[in-house]
Length: 490
Image (tube, rainbow, N blue to C red):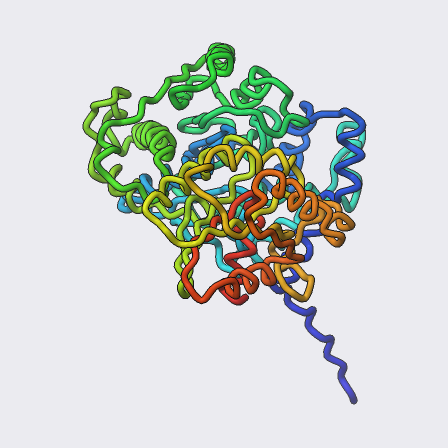
């Protein structure tokens, strides 16, 4: 008798997980339709996130055991999260596992979910991804309460990753976690955190106006939405006065306090792990957040005093010196050339990155190259602003405008696929040609090139001269991430 043995279902791979995750992105047409409707995020964003949480087998109260530091802001929130994580990691005996959730990623989506500073492995990412995916696929929500959560539907890209991060950190037994808000705060999917151990707000500015509002007051209101009852909140000094006033009002509403953190004197004596003089502000905020977190967890007896000349614990200083954060004021030596990378893509971040590059170039006599792209914001305005911060101290001999497409084949690295830009504009190099025309008005002495992809741009730059070059890369984290992927050859 012949016995048929059923074939085992093919095991899911990391590429399967990435393809499934990418299917959750909002495409360009949908984003434009939502913007034209004038509808902004509302309270349903949080209630739906709570419902997704229920469907994967948790309550939001389960996340309290992660002892979360929750960080928002317009500029510097990612760097602040990295500094905070690095300080906490100095307390390995008490905190053997620390989680870090940030966005966006540079080279691989696994960078968004880190344990002890390292991106989740492909194996664990795939395992936890499909645990979440399958739980959501097998459960449902009452349509009278959640009409958008129809059978078979999934949360969006960022919401899914947020759920995945909570699940991962709980399964891995993390003792503390640092969470960077995606956008805003009040309606951000990370804001289902009920009881963080500390909240932080980095420098405020005007960005994501469609979702957060057009004024600094509206933006501050959204950012202050992460404040929780009796949970100390901290912010940087030199906040816009109107924004700081709103943060203080939000703190009062939530029965807590918000403290302005000075730039600590001792930071002048060390070299921070992330370059740029402006990082002292973010590092100081990280000191306050880590100090409060460690005190809340009874690892420290009392928090660091928030005065400029306070003596900081050596572990704090070591953590700040050891911080690694790719794509932010990062220097890469490749062959004869030196690449200066920053994913700056807003007016405030362009100012910070341009100032850093200008200061580094003070003693360099090498030819200068600019590699730039910004596909979705007002790119022309950004290059004018950038040039205003570096000219006449720095002059670019060559300027290249590229798309964020990774490879010369016209394909993206799987982790860098983006559906939220207009494909026709990318294919036709519409933004890049506009930037080239605009730069010619700024500086008609530069040699200007338009490149269809990042690999092509790198080859172009490396063929410009037999001598060494200084190359400034900015305008987009997607550009910087794609560049590092090509450098890796993967």
